[in-house]
Length: 443
Image (cartoon, rainbow, N blue to C red; front, side, top):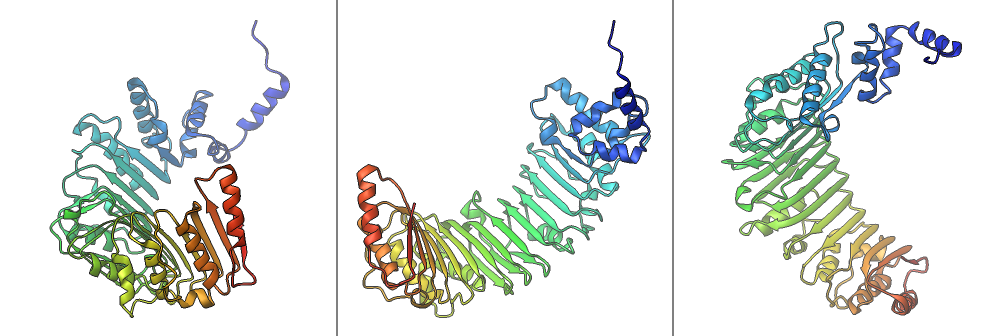
């Protein structure tokens, strides 16, 4: 004989069933989608109750490790969710991919879901399509008045089509990855259609047949541009940025043909990581890039190529970072990078914090003029890659001798074992320092 339910259990179930649908839906919203759906078998009342509790639908999570028959069940579930006869579901976030799509016809239900969710006030959508042959995206995707976040990750090689009536009046976050634009009109139309855009990210997008890429937005606060996997030959255009409200700027990849960066007076932090240089225009373009961000307060600068272009900018007396108080510098395979760094410090007269690594360095610092920031402003220096070499001791000694108001020097050691580490540690701690307040910390 089966167990009879205890009276206490029956009482609890009665109290739950007496709750109004709105409260039950709110309770279900705290469960994972899969668990919320399972409640549909409890009774007729609960059959569609879960639908109103689901605000986020993520294909990446739902389709993980599913077999083909499970995918069909999942598609039926999405149909039930979005085309519920009893209640119109209003998703807040929809993250969709085409991992289960075999041909173009399979995109029809997928596009139907996207359009239905958008028509019901969807706020956030992410689309990740790995197939190269994808039908034109639904027009509603570019005319939604409810979207706040739009993320597009497409592997298509054809031109990205943006409708002429594109208008996204409430979009604040736009992320474009791996898209191809045959001319400058489509990308310009897309960006200009976002009337309150605050965060723009462009990853490895190709812009063909253009002479200038324009990013003009007075409300933009964060801008991330990554051209790490773009061929140099495809980057033969000038980049023009006008963003007076920008507080964060990140640029990774190639130094291109030229830059016109204007009105960056609000810039607080910039991260510049260079892996390639345009052979013809590199020196002029690098200077233009740095000139555009010279109002920044915190700068992370990484040079991953054998090139001195960034350091020749000291020859330009106009390029002074008056507001820069924090500089993090990393360079690999750069000739005499210690010397180039010290020369560059003349361009940052008010620097307070310096972070750098000593990998692949050479000697030759003693005869260099002393930057004014070391004499009057630098209070903290963090150095990684300390290996006990003669160059490492010369660099550390240079800072200890000339950083007159230094309060803390933090050293991170590498490639040292046993007695060698202890010996080098003692030598480091015995180095003379001209700042009486300076504390040396070794990790």
